[in-house]
Amino acid sequence: MPPPPTRKKGKKLPHPAIRPLLLWLRQANYWLIAQGAMAVMALLRRLPADRALDFADRAARRIGPWFGRHRTALDNLRRAYPDKPEAEIAEIASDMWGNMARLAAEYLFLDQLFDYDPEGRRPGRIEVTGIENFQEMAGETDRPHIIFTGHLGNFELLPVAAATFGMNVTALFRPPNNPYIARYILSTRRSAMGGLLPSGRGSALALGAILAQGGNIGVLVDQKFDDGVFTTFFGRPCVTNPLVPILARRYDAAVYPARCIRLPGNRYRLEIGGRLELARQPNGEIDVQAVAQQLTDVVEGWVREHPGQWMWFHKRWRQGRKPFPPGMVS
Image 1: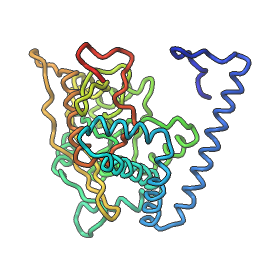
Image 2: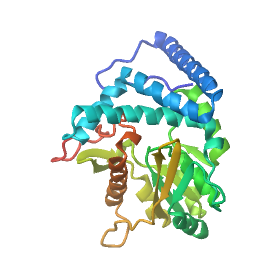
Image 3: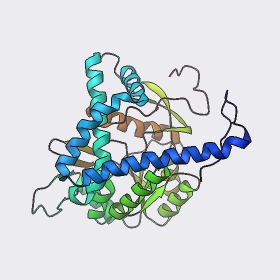
Image 4: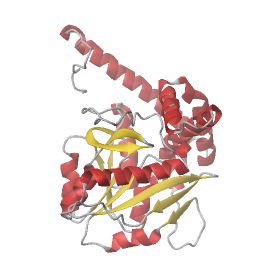
């Protein structure tokens, strides 16, 4: 059951007598949306994987611009790339919708798509670079590791790849607001990816417990976090979750970047970078704010390489609970 409505600045709470009705209507709306999504997925599942992914891509490029988030994406793109012509901005937004639709459809075919053979006996859809870094982490059983990534390509394939190299990675993820879709996605992810931890109250402590035992975690670092630290992304101020640098400092965890890049023909390149040298304070402790900026800079470099493979409709630059410091203007 969702939490009761909370007061937002400038908005009045509904009368207590009608709150149950509003909650029921919200749940009914979630259920209807989920039924529609499940029907679409059932149809896609009847198609071969390549045809289903290509169909989802084409459909999303047509339907995506109908949604309000499309306007958010265009606005973010214009601010991130002030020199790009409008036609190129629109093309990146279209690519973004295609990427997001493929990501949703790929849940149905994860068992078919991930065909990587570490022995190289057969070619497949998946290629991996930085294999030595996976092997380095897998071999360090006495030290915890944090793998960070962003919402690029099919980032869901990264924990599957880690398992191929003998690594058990617990991935932190934010469930969708729709509880019916969230349950479906969680069950699909768990069947293919192993350890998963929904974000929320207590998740940081749970991740810390894994690291304290020498385990490995995966974290997405490219979303706004209301109580985060101030960083810049594409030259604009934003608020970033300090979880990774805080955990790295507390548990002496090694931090590695990883990403997925979509290739033509429904193929994928998974890249695991070398261990980061984390910024430190004069006393030798990890500098939380500086490392948060390090991670943000890495993600920005990835997005600049493949801008159509990132989710531009996310309100990454919205101010958090604290105002931006003087001199920082969103």
